[in-house]
Image (cartoon, rainbow, N blue to C red; front, side):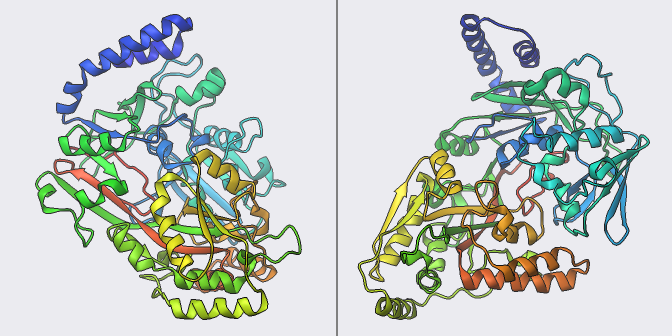
Length: 554
């Protein structure tokens, strides 16, 4: 396809600004001209990414949007299967020793880096070796790169050989941990831990973000930011299916970056796109019935697949006080009253068409060894009584409660505003841009805020670590500045406990502490919801919403 050539031309040639505008117009024209062919080609998988992406470097894959593309271009030592179990990927096998302090990985001998683009010093189809693994992981903890993923290597013992990891020959990598850490394998399954070739990174420098070279099932053919991205099948990909056929089955993946959710929705209905993840509230009634099922009028062309998401939507509360003045949101009893007054079932049914699971727990049940969340309690009279008791000690007027949010969640926060004002409280909703919201939450400028937490790996530690003091924002995700010596002590014991059953008991107690102190007011666990054209086969859906297109065909 001609777009692949144009893509390399854009990436490799220095073009004067006034000529670049003209060339961009030409490329878009070519792109539009071949769109009909791409739409009708059964070997091409198409979807839209409304949030856009700004990097294809795994070191900076901190959100789902770039992860979906990065996971097609790169591979890591291990990966998560559909059941959220860690399994080998480019590592053929692995084992632990020294009571979990040492982990050894033996690499496959048939994994090679993709042939394009041309990189001086990088032999076409060079074998991926142990030195590549050590280089890639050292790179994400190198301050020069400022990768957001450096935390996945925190368990390593910096005083051990290689500062915690070393290559033993061409096919073996060994990691040394400070202490036993059972979730360690899950950390290596994150997108940050994907393997890159040193030659390509050193050649491109920061421009590696748009010139990625990996060993994954696809390789970059063309990418114009804010317009579209095309991946081509990697002809030397190492993996084969059960019958011996080379993966992936698809010849190409085509990703648009249309920010208009209406265009994405219509594109799915009209067959321009093969897949859509989630559903904007504006189209929920059109797509889903009152029970949250796909409406019958779409059943002939579409299907919907759902699975519990390791994700929790919540209202966070900054529980750290800068002075001695009493503020309502700093009172545990008031936060409990707020939680009791939330009609979670009503929100799930009316605002989310049954596509979410109401909860009063921050940690999803699957990570606590449970099948489903505990029963949700909404008791407005009890909440009113609790507030009346507080008013006897701290007479009103009180400071206004301000919930900071973005425009996508105005409906949710307005519902909470109505429910909490019915208790006699003054509540305001402050709608800001996503960037402002991130900045205010990270820097303690939001007393209350709507946020969600999505698991990076399937272990309750990933959720509970939001409440340890070492993760205080802005350096970490403890946006509430919650601190508890009892919590810290039990958390340390839990992450050092090698027996899963005992660890689950500790995790449950830690979750109970958060439910008691309520630095966050959990609202619901989301579900991964995928809408697919009927002709798409070989689809796998998983609880962290990672995209795997290796076995997809149409």
